[in-house]
Image (cartoon, rainbow, N blue to C red):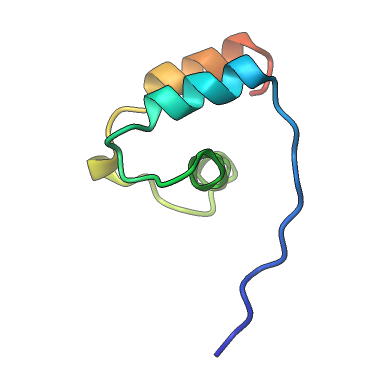
Length: 69
């Protein structure tokens, strides 16, 4: 059995965290960390986007507006 990958903490503004938390309700993500990891993998081409996750364009637009993308 393989070890889970090592993780590092990344700080984001509290208001952005709360926006993400609201946006992921009902989309299959149990935590903001899970969603951010998923989103970053998509952004770096490491994981195909799943259609059942819903439309993340609003979150992407918000992250762009805040300068994170």
